[in-house]
Image (cartoon, rainbow, N blue to C red):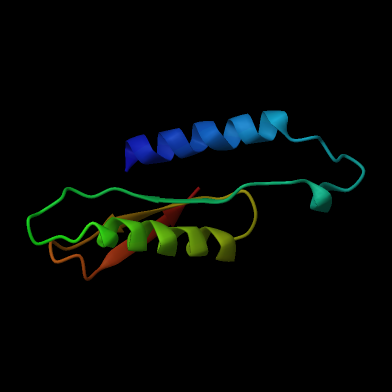
Length: 87
């Protein structure tokens, strides 16, 4: 996940640099939340599994507030258990 989080951080930084500053109203500042995931594919793994984990990570980022990056980590080989971490 380190690579995915690094790329997400770079995207977020570019977004910050190009968004107009709203010093008079910080709540009006445009931010970006990103959900990402990585996995090592197995022959039994469906490609949709990666998209589902990233989608859940995005919703976790939105639940945690503005300007978040969340990533999903598969905790067991079957993919049934996923941990989400946010920065």
